Length: 131
Image 1 (tube, rainbow, N blue to C red):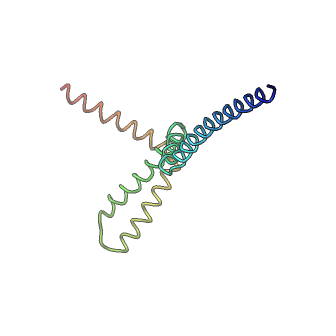
Image 2 (tube, rainbow, N blue to C red):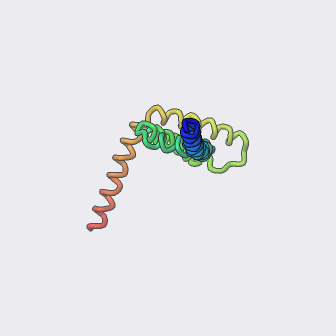
Image 3 (cartoon, one colour):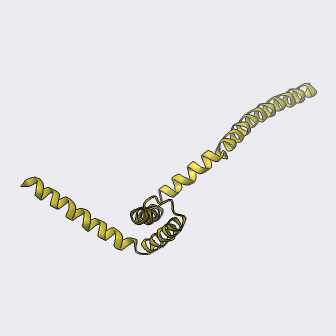
């Protein structure tokens, strides 16, 4: 009788261990699937951009850089237009780089100037609309 009880206990333990193994295998497969999805390049880029977008200093740096590049581009277009002359293009490119570098160092003053300019522009427009 003792042997049958031990055999029953052993069979119950085996069944329990097989059940645990199946559950762990299912969990492991699901975790692997999530890891593979998390390592997709588009998801990595997206999560990195989301982290960067939530940093206030990154937003300011992006705006400052954009202002500098746009200022350089428009100054080149203002002075040289869309010239076909290669010398003018080279000088325009150098001027664009120089102005972009200068404005990147003095972006705060440019912001203040733009703010004052826009305030004056809109206040004059409002005064003209009232008259």
